[in-house]
Amino acid sequence: MHANEAARIYFDRAAAQLDLSESMRRLLLTAKREVRVQLPIERDSGEIATFIGYRVQHNDARGPFKGGLRYHPQVDLDDVRALAALMTWKTAVVDIPYGGAKGGVTIAPADCSLRELERVTRKFVDAIHDLFGPDVDIPAPDMGTTADMMAWIMNQYGKYHGFSPACVTGKPVEFHGLPGREEATGRGVGALTLKLLSRLGRKIPGTRIAIQGFGNVGTHAAKYLHDAECRIVAVGDATNSFHDQRGLDVLELLRHARSHAGRLVGFGGGEAITGSELLAADCDVLIPAALGGVITGTNAAAIRAPIVVEAANAPIEPAADDLLAARGVVVLPDILANAGGVTASWFEWVQNRQHYQWSLDRVRGELDRILGQAFEQVWQLSASRQVPLRTAAYMLGVGRVARATVLGGVT
Ligand code: NAD
Image (tube, rainbow, N blue to C red; front, side):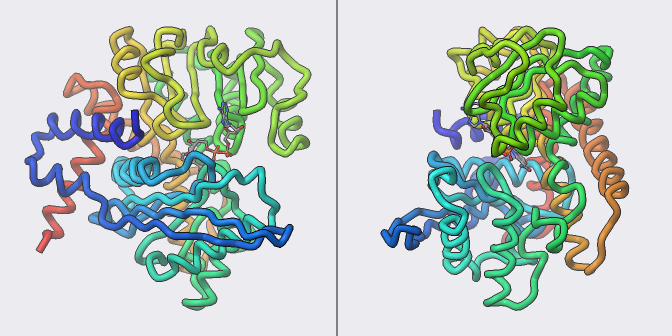
């Protein structure tokens, strides 16, 4: 199933609950602008390579478009379109003054040198600099992109428009970035997992967690949950997966990843398992924190975790979502679970505009407050309307965007 069809199914369920008119549904489902650009660069070898970049600006009824930039070989327009809509609902769920957008380049970053990635990124800015900016659309990192790339974006944008640190978020801390931005998505995933466990009446210490993906989000979620005395029983990335029912040594895993270019390959602890075995691990909470579409109608029956926290965007296909719901598996949806990143991006943008910087403690405190509030609103709506947490989160997000559209008017 295409990512966009999946997003549409979740939207329709919420729209039906909200009793939205056909015309409002059509408006909310249509992206405001979709851009596809050619990005030719000279490789280090002197050869010309041509990449394709996308930016989809889905909705700005509640504020400027906001969303990450993904560098991955599978990026296409359909994918970016679906992720842009997810951002619109996500910023609305946590009630921050943004709309939704997403961008990406169809590229395998691992096959490029740093200088080649810099050329691609600067070319992308050259192609779309008139379409984004602090009051228009603010990109940020996503899979395959880093803080350094955000610094290149700010620098290249500045060549056209002058000093504008608020044109992009997720920048290095020492270059107009925010202390705590890098950890924010994983920390939010961890904090929301604990809130969910508490609401479900489950004891936190000893909770067995399996995490797919050990990049930015997976590592910080693992660390946060480890600090909360949960047991990380399985972890995997694109190279390898490992399992130990007694709990893997998280600090050693983090050290290993740091010293092996972020990869788990060669890790000595635990028993090596396959990626499919990781998803089917015997655990209390499964956290997919890598790619979208990893839990499908085909493998959903194998999932043993009674709780799934969607740290990645769109990791569960609708057919799988239905199968999990029928078995009573509780799913904390992406538009809430991984909203810590965009919330911290908002803090960074606010501070760039004020030319001021908060302390790490204040960032963490504000992040916990905003995510906690959104969690409670989604939980209460789910209980009062007797709908799954995903439908409740979509109802909250889609409802707020619809209301802003009515208030702002369409004429
Ligand atoms: P990342 O590039 O830092 O890490 C991705 C991880 O996934 C790596 O460990 C990689 O090896 C692993 N991976 C890739 N393919 C895999 C496969 N087939 N099987 C198992 N593991 C695989 O990316 P990230 O920033 O951690 O993002 C992860 C997910 O979280 C993405 O879906 C992203 O959209 C979402 N997300 C990220 C942020 C953020 O702030 N970084 C915010 C919201 C959502």
